[in-house]
Length: 122
Image (tube, rainbow, N blue to C red; front, side):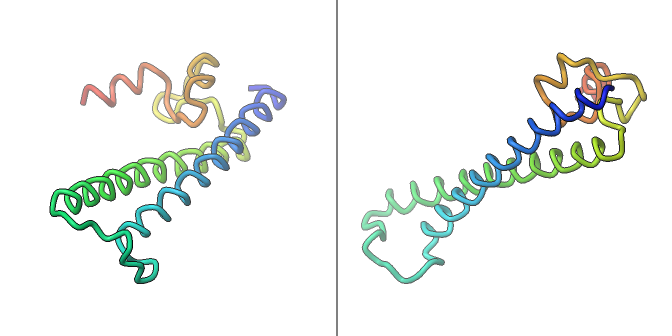
């Protein structure tokens, strides 16, 4: 892959990482605030058991999203490492070139479509 193309993907990945880091930070703060870990403000305490259940579900859902986003951040960092090592755009499984259409859709992907399908079927 050409250096200019790698720079385009690097910029795209850096923007994605910055956005996701902001999202993860914001969601983590919301989840912590609902768990009561940030101070002792009892004005937001649910009064009814149904409210407590809803709050717990919302907190668990938010923490699940945070975990998913952290995984994506990890894959973005790995892709940035592949750019620095001039290995970006090559499938880690078969070594073939990953098509630009796939990289445009999922710029942090480490595998081509065929290898991704093979992984999912296993």
